Length: 251
Image (cartoon, rainbow, N blue to C red; front, side, top):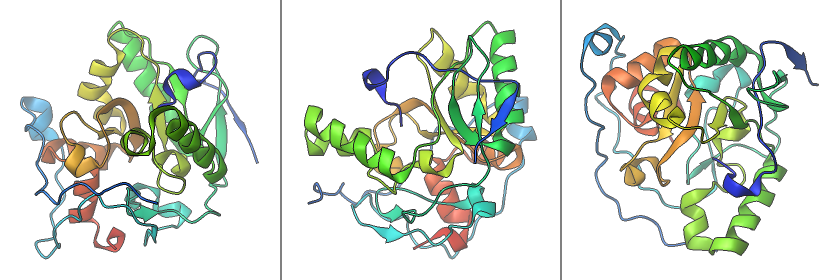
């Protein structure tokens, strides 16, 4: 999730990389709502994974600290982290790299395999006339805990819970999520096109009951091109898609 005005300075993405070693009341349980279905050639061409017809209902966005079942570093695309499910404190991907090309981003960390499609997305945005800059990348458990405390101090706990994840519950801790800077037109472009490069918007507009957080068009999670295309074609919030299609991720 984006640090908004809490960050100092803009950050930027690189073509070269450097390897570096008391809960608030829960949301009412409301049935998940799918996003509007995509249309056009891209929608019909996107691969669609088969759903598990035996999947239990998606849990409501209550607050708990249940260890998410999938924690292997190789299973990054299948991990669910939300208001219930959390990564262990020790989770720290071993292949983090800096992204650092001046004018696009600066000194943010992501997992190494993310770089090619991040680079491709930046190029795609540039070709469409938009400047894509990365505002935030990987955060450790401790960094996420500090950020959550800052939001509580400024906004109060109920509002903070809708705007930033508690430590262990943030997709940023996976090393496969980024927040985009608010350059003009970037967020709408990313919402419409990021799936083509393996990225999905985790918290779409109007889907708080399903995603557990307020809309964040700047927050993208990398799941790979095939899975991103499947999520786009299914017109689902990523959390719901993973719950239905990845039984091992449920708890």
